[in-house]
Amino acid sequence: MDFGLATELYPDEYRYQIANYSSNNNPLDLIQTIQQLHASLDPRTVFACYGNILGQHLPIQGARLTYGQYKLSWGKRYGITVKRQLILAGQTLHIQYQLLTPLTPSQTSDMQEMEPLLLQPLLNAMQYEEMSKQAMFDSLTGLGNRHYYSQSLTTAIARAHRKQGPVALIVLDLDNFKQLNDRFGHKCGDYILKEFGNIIQSTIRNTDQAFRIGGDEFVIIVQGDIHATSLLCERIVVTINQHPSFNQFGVSCSLGAAESHDTIEAEQLYELADKALYQAKAAGRNCFKLSQNQLV
Image 1 (spheres, rainbow, N blue to C red):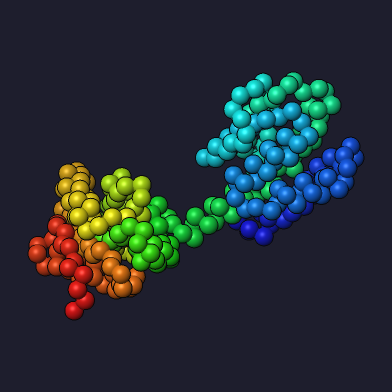
Image 2 (spheres, rainbow, N blue to C red; image 1 turned 90 degrees about the vertical axis):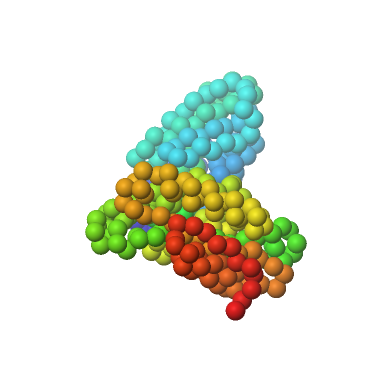
């Protein structure tokens, strides 16, 4: 998709909608409305701005929007319900308004003329959010990518240095993954990688973050000490060993973990966890080892 085209402020259809709206409204108010709606590239903020503008001119006290994976809300959840459908990028967009009082015919007309002004800014924000996700997440597993990992680990260690809680790092990779790819092909390998990502994501807590940083190498930033990290490692090993596809293809997982301390930096923490991973490999694989936080 050409993002430059997607974010054009005033395509021909949009110009027509604006001209039609301005024939019955103050042009200054219209310009301010457009500027406010285009001021953010967050879909939730765009919709909240739209709700606030409506609430200033009409007896609307709440609104809910459903469009694909998006469920946005603004204001109160009670009142007289009015449901509307719009078309955005060829798909149906549903809006449910909550009214303080019934709309008069002129107010209904005003609302219908305001609605098209939401569409382009909302589409811009949704497309921008999708592009941002693609820049931060691995397309195969849905986990964070290497760039996102680097940013997140630096932030997590900074919090630990400010005494805002311990942080640990787990480095994981799959045992015998190369042999799997060579024997069964990359399609099978991709399936195992995706399943591995699902296992990690379902095993970690909401406060932890998981990333695929290359090939079959994964990392987890753990908000907790080395004891909490060892419990997580154990859960992952057990879950992998119980997974039928991993048993079928003879694939297991090795892990190494290290806890941050006052003077350690991101690269050093990764090095400690990576050394622990190689200790797990040397110990026979399909297990985890914990670093003693000693760089040698």
